[in-house]
Image (cartoon, one colour):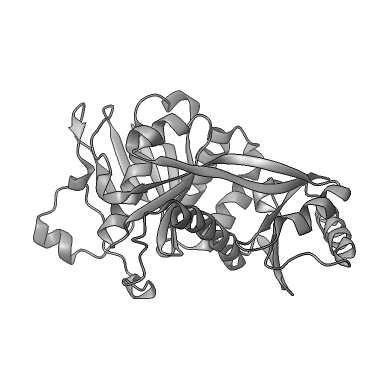
Length: 312
């Protein structure tokens, strides 16, 4: 697909597919992307421009926590709001997708609160759950209480951020590569299979995973990207626009397509879209495999995410 600048500026359609030049160094600034139909939903004046360590740490966590709260929009999630907490339970038993986000300090009666929630998740057949604390909540007040009830403190994945104006835009790609914004149920099914194969999860979860992500939306504040190689979906990422930053999640590539530049591309393109929307900061939480890749892209390690987890 080749569009003039005038056609690009006026083009509003999704889905879109972008063929990439074959066996060349690709500058994704030349990749055609549709204008955002829901641009008005985002206040273009509320973009983080503070690059201090404390601001980046807070923004990374805040974006992730708002993403958890966005689960309310998915029919696959059972989502509850209580006094000082939110809770979500998903049909596929992955710990981050079964959890509690607490917005208050612990009290002497919260042993009952913890037991009630453990009973709730056991009834949902969750294998493991997570417990998160909003910024400003007293960690010590929850630590001993959660430990008494079987939770463990986890020093989680590296949380990273970058100035999107410094994004490295050039990568070498194999023949037959193309990229698409996911905008229909069929392509979301394809994406679900890539997620499950990429993370080594049961393929039987495909319908639930596809339904979960499709319910979250296909534009703003949440959208998904899917890379194809010779017509087959091979790599994916998602971006969530929230708390003044653009948060990348769900980056994975199927085993047979690894080492060919797809993970870099599928991370870079949504960040370029975010930059075009006026965002200055991109955030993510890195896996061990992805950490060196993100460093090469320009991401910096700000801190390690932490939370509590409990096996049921």
